[in-house]
Length: 313
Image 1 (tube, rainbow, N blue to C red):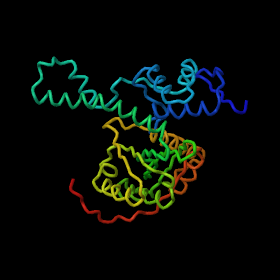
Image 2: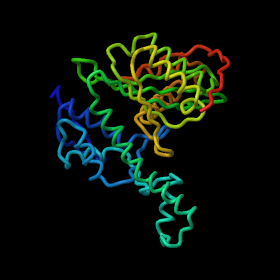
Image 3: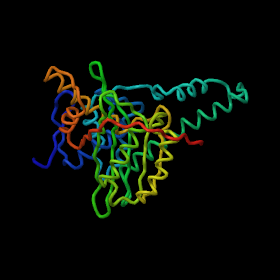
Image 4: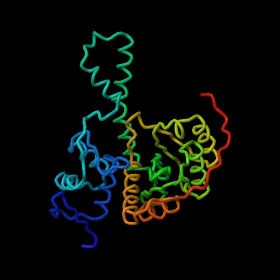
């Protein structure tokens, strides 16, 4: 029994026994496909269960049956949303789909083409992301970054969540989560992001890595900036490892970082309820988050803001 996991459905019915490794892999893949939204305790499903299972089965080395997969899915808190969610581009395309093609002006036809490309592109991009994370090549490192704001009484902390999946040469796939916790009311700007890259370099996180695939949203203050991209172009030369930088499509940037942030925030809420107090330092935050398996908090000092020369693009 020690090498098996028992899981229950919503009603508490005890179901099938599967090995911890298979069950843990299923949990990881489902977290990637259906992440928990940051600050919430549920997932939103915009497609069918069968579609999710087929995607899971294509990524898992030893997939469980559809029946056992569904028993696990029923144990989760899942809300069913509309297919296109809240993406304004997808919603606009949905509206334009109802119009006759011959009723478009040239400008509307051009706009519809852009919307069509967006609707077709983002599912392919997400599939590519999940495949990279599930099957990294030898020496590859997949890095997913996203900021989450930890709101407390009268103040807040910024947490840059860095999810790393890598396959060192001759070793198994490794996955872990880093939380870079800023000082009270620290800005989530490009200075924060650059400090994190330098920390990763100085602490030898890239040893044994031959290529890096980076995934972020299009955050205009910290990720999708000319300063950040210019820094990375020099940074990859400094560490001798080529980068491939991918931005998630607008309004479709949900990733494993959302699930990781939700776990951390739930742990913080539990601590505050037990201690009947708020949190006043990122050091205390680090102690709380560090109790989660696979989560490693790093406390940032007060960051020095220096002049960054604007780069014309």
